[in-house]
Length: 279
Image (tube, rainbow, N blue to C red):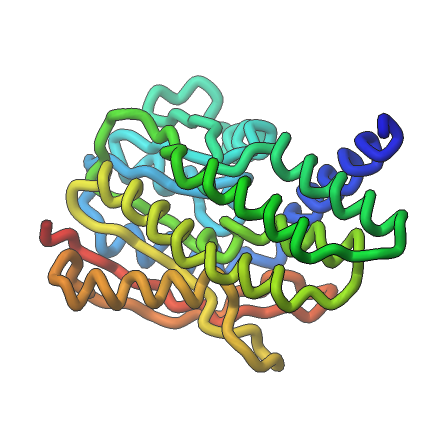
C-alpha cells in the first residue's frame, strides 16, 4: 500500500510538471505581447487587476501590466511559478504586485492521490470497476462543491483569466488515461458533466470580486483537430447564459492563435472576450 501511494504521488507530480511547457517564454512572445497590448488598450491606468492562473506569466507581460495598474494581484496554485514570474520581470519588492496561492476547482491534492491509488489498485488486479471509480469521483466532486476558492475579500476593477477554464478539471481524466489507459466512457462523461459546475463556480467567484470587466480567454479549437475543448466549451456556455441574463455585456473581443507547444505542434485558437459587469 505504501508503494502504491508513492507511485500515485510520482504520477501526480509528473502530470503537474507537464503543465510547464518548455520554451513557452520564447515561443509565446508574440502571443504574450498581443494579449498584453489588448489589455492595456481596454483598461484604465491606475486601476486594479486580478490575474487568475498567472503561473510564470509566459502569456502576459507582467512588467507592462504592473506599470499600467496601481495594484496587480496574481492567483495560482503553484507558488514557485509565481515567484519565477516576479523574478523574471525583476519585480521583487514592488509594492504594486502581490500574489496568493489557491486552488480554483476545490479539489485537494490528497483527493487526487486517493483517486490515483484506486486506479492503480484496479490496474494491478486487472479489473477496472467503473462503478467504484464513479463513486469515488462523486465523493470528490461533492466535497469540492462545498468549498469556495479563497481569493480573499478584496475587490478589483478588472479580472483576467486566459486559458484557465480548460485546466480546472483535467487532472482526473489525465490520471485515468495515464494509469489505466483503458476506455472509460462513463468516467469521461461524468468528468465532463462536472466541468459545467466547476466552471460556473469559478466564474461566480471571479465576478464576485470584480467591479468593472472580466477578460476571459478560452480555446475555441485545437488547430488540425476536431472536437471542442472540455472546460473551454462549458465556459462558453456559461458566458452565453450570463449574456442572456443581462449579467454581462460583451464589449468586444478578438481571436488569436496560441502556440501552446510548438514541439508537439499543439496550437489553440483562442477567443478573448472583454466582458462588462452589469449586475
